[in-house]
Amino acid sequence: MRLVFAGTPEFARSALEALYAAGHTIALVLTQPDRPAGRGMKLQASAVKQFALDHGLPLAQPHGLRLDGKYATEAQAAQQAIAQAGADAMVVVAYGLILPQWVLDAMAGPGQWGCLNIHGSLLPRWRGAAPIHRAIEAGDSHTGVTIMQMDAGLDTGAMLLQESVAIGPTDTTANLHDRLATLGARLVVQALADPAAWVVTPQPDQGVTYAHKIDKSEASIDWRQGAAQIARRARAFDPFPGATARVAGETLKVWSAQALADDALALGAPGTVLRADTQGIVVQTGDGALCLNTLQRPGAKRLSAADFLRGFALLPGMAFELPKALPGADA
Image (spheres, rainbow, N blue to C red):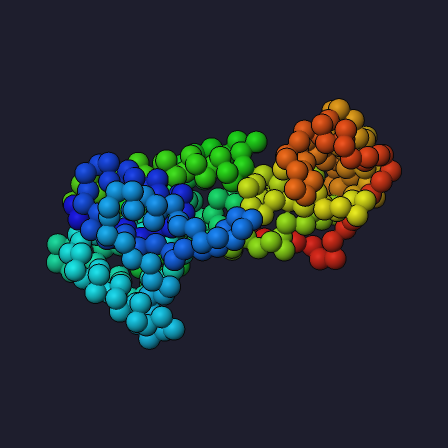
């Protein structure tokens, strides 16, 4: 099958690699323009672009796809490239640009199978930009991947395939991302192997939630929240943006933490250090005590609590700062 592929990060690269390995002809790759990254803020190619370059695939990087928008000239060039590709279908994975109606129409002709999207959730739960983060943050027991036909809405298209995976008590966005990327790649190859066998299922109206984009302002830990909620946020924000906490004039990142069942430890105001030893750093929260297991100082490596305390004097009775606003996300 001839395909147009649109995607940008590593999650998308996994799907592109699988489609290429399955023998599909990648007639055109669309990906985001190079962005500055790293300490030097040098322009870096996306994971999808790098794969396309390595395999000699036709590539386009428009800043926008609206024919009447700021980047109309680039959009028109992309429109021409898509038309010339003569593709049977388009696969879209974490592309980062909204597809205008003309793109959907370009894949809706006779003998074409439309635009397929790999979405990292069990739709209709967690439509939107950050489904993996929000599933962990909300305490969901399961998530998964949905292969859907794209329409003009935000992740509202009919479903073709769906498979769930369990979210473990120590899963982070980083490792769950990798599992879902592998699953999504397998499912989209499965779907495109026999389009005539698709069972198209409209999404139900019940159970819709939105996974709003992660913002750095959410990183600050509010100790007035419950211990279990803070622990989930630390896992959800690994690797980005990282849960942060200020104490003794320094901003630390908390990468892993565990809510403690021993209510007897909960004796102080939220943010108060109750214990700091080789077993961990125990902090009072708005509901129970939280043991911080892995921390990081600015410019340093992630360390276990025991190693961290060798270079940072954190004593019982000290208090982490409370942020001015209570960060949170819709569930």
